[in-house]
Image (tube, rainbow, N blue to C red; front, side):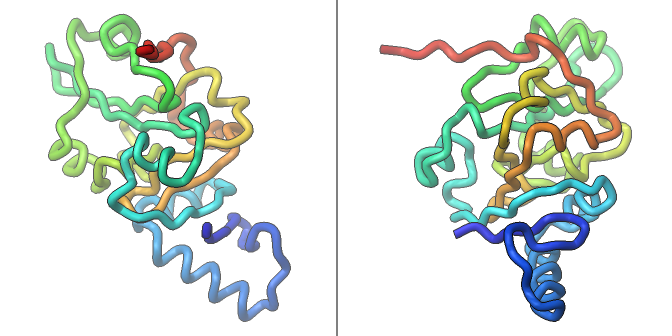
Length: 194
């Protein structure tokens, strides 16, 4: 099942002996992507670390395999400008929605055209793999846009920098990201085919 760890440093939901506590904390930190672990620590993010099968890291497959609703799973998408100077932003949306790249993100980026960055570019920029991209540990100059609704969601599953774990956080934890901007209508509900 899921391994638990909360910042400060206390294992969530238990009171293990001090030696056990230290071992669990070190175990969790070593399982996390290095930049992500540092960012989580620096920002004081309270999270639960979920161990997963890397073959099910992509959001839809993860939700089906581990029985999480799409509304509680988040996608961190790196968007690239296609006109003018090369710029990148990160956008966090619920997996049940689609990113409004052409109507909203292009205006936020002050560019006429933008699209999802390629998986190679994402890895080059962030050091993270597709299926594991997270807003924690991104380059400091990268602005992070998030759907306004995510602030109040009781929990959200995000990538952890790799494909073998996910982070489970309360939506309010996103407020701790220093360069985050919450945006209304950053995404739209996906059309459901019947």
